[in-house]
Length: 413
Image (cartoon, rainbow, N blue to C red; front, side, top):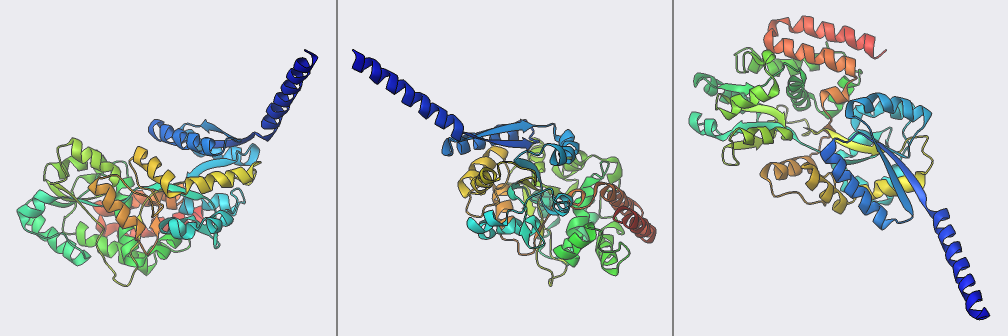
């Protein structure tokens, strides 16, 4: 009996010791994010998978309101930093990198061969030759077009800018807007400018311009607007675009009153809700303007970073490596309806998702984030107002560029 009691006591002691050891080994990973409901559910599934693979790590996710997060991150990075934080690639992360608030994670990229698997987004994650986070999703921009009106007018899908402009003459003769947009909220016009500048001057120049390193009165900027003028001056763009929301312009494409629309892939749902199908809706890369410029694309990229004040850096790096894997990015983006960045991931059986994955995973020239992510908020607003005015008053181009240049000198000093 004594033996049984002693054995039971010993067993209890061992169990208690094991439990204490387990508790002592359990580690917490604090993660601040700004997910909307659908992405939140998808990411909670990723976290559950990570915790199952790493039972000694407990990820504590604190989700902020999307808009409120933009202010909150500036406070918590200096006051009470988590171990992981959501943000964006490109120039948008530069202020936090340059102020020492994001950690260099180049060792994660090297150890897990991310320079190859995440190659398409590597330039937008690199500053001073180092990587500062891991990207997990993006979506393509390009030109969505109405196949029926292309057939009606009898033109081919263009590969070059000259072919695109030539088509516009035929669309106008048929009473169809060659290019539609709705700039009531300003940002759709930035998509047009970004692509014109990327195709005229290339990714590095575009990044230098949005970083405030190039004057808006530079001849290379004027060259971009000269290409834009080939659509504006003959009246190839929807005339009342400044009074339209982007969905209003989408309706023009759906109704066959417009042929082309520079837009992000999120618009496909609106086109299809309006009655378009895979047989009537087409997608093409923005045409080549300067053949000597490497093809760069526009794809707003969401990322995760390790703040400088993180307390559990080792496990944070383990999470970044997990998030970068092909299988995790496949599962996550299936739920998001967007594109994985890992080139070995697979994508949904959707022609627009497949076209975007092919476009972005093979781009040799870099990936821009979008004008209002690549430029500071104040410069972005003034710039987009200028883009809208140019499409209404192209003769004011010199005054517009002088105004943008004065803003650049004030905002970036």
